[in-house]
Image 1 (tube, chains in turn orange, blue):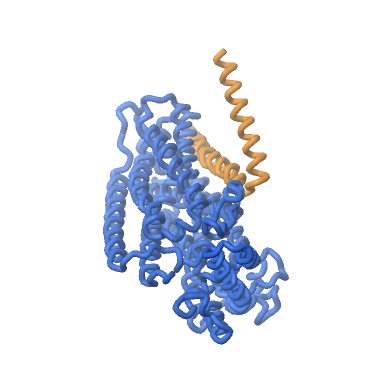
Image 2 (cartoon, rainbow over the protein chains, first blue to last red):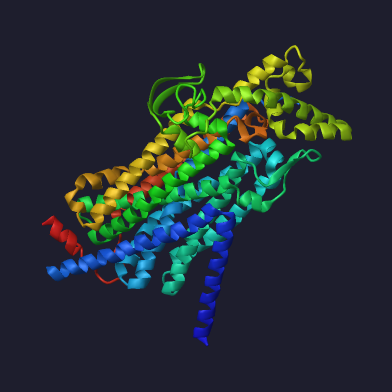
Length: 63
Length: 536
């Protein structure tokens, strides 16, 4: 039951996200760009940290 | 009605500029750091590595100091609209007050609540729950900036409202028109992402300080990497949005864009339209309406401003000439409005509505009319008054030109610095380039200075209007005694300076102190293996 609620919750977030993207894309292209761009910036920064750990693990392995 | 004492208007402008510029020393860090904290905590939740929790908490502490003092400095400005700009509040309060009220709700109920949960919820919330709170804090702080910038967008390019001659106020015609105005959109994204750049530079600069001293290396190297990547994309986005705002100014605020470019004559006055030079350096002289020591880059101005190769950018002298008929029409509009206010006659209303679009230019002429009464303008003195008023439509070109250039030069410097920082961080070669670490450390205040120059460009370039094309600034202020304005100005300067001193003291203290070990956190190695090798 808990999993169903979790899935429904995630589906709702997804639907809201798509709805927001459609409205923002039509009426507010720069707002839409901010939503997409900020998400991308955060994810790239996070990916950089994960890459750092991977590089560090590789360096430790070599040592 | 007599006009407000010009000294009071100048002091009111000075006070608002002072409080706004002080407040904006704090805002960019809040806007940017929250999303970097969210990125750090995301890595903590995904990987489970305690170092990322430590990073989130350490940078969160510095963010908290900035947030607490920043909120205090922002409070006064909303009251200033009522105390020092009562004519402005009367004229556009119905429209302008709405985004300000929403901002108040956002800042105090959403942002502050989530900030509290973020600081005190580490042991009370689940990992994903706390991460969600951190994201909501970031969203809340940026959304509160959004509503301020929507309000400012209305002042630059009034959308979603019309003037009601019965109530003598601007009233809503479309809330969505206000929220989705192109100016508000571009301004929000430009300002918010400028905050991202400031936040990234702050974290990168302090991390560089630790790396140079080989202190807290595990935390500093990871923070540097994340901030560099965060900053390189943000700095490119800021430049892109700056270009979008420039194009928008060309379409809706032609005097501002001409002042930004130091353009007294039309862009095709001394060359073809396509070959018009973009001025890298010049000393604009507002009195003689000309530039000295011009150094330009040919073929750059037209595509940069108009995004075309053949559209002429009207110079300020041409725009003055073009304003003449609007001023004459505006005088008719204001006279008809006064007559309608006195008699409520349909003929007066019709006369007003025929010239309504130029009403602001009539208000502008009032300062130059005999006894500041437009009814005393006659065919004999009309030409002289119109000629005087034409000169009034031009903002301070020297200030606008140079504040824009300083902001823009800094913007491109940030792109280069973040690009080098990302490159050497990704190659783990930061320690081989101490010049980069030193440059980063000394660049910490520069993005904040760039946002200040950006605001000066936007607001000095909007003059002589408080609401562009509708309400001149000299008619927007409150009629206070000069002594009251001087007293409150000095009071604010002292109070805000003490806030800045407190911020700098606390920031230096806690940044020097570095992250403190938590009893529940596992021990982290003092030196990252990659950096240990580089140090050997």
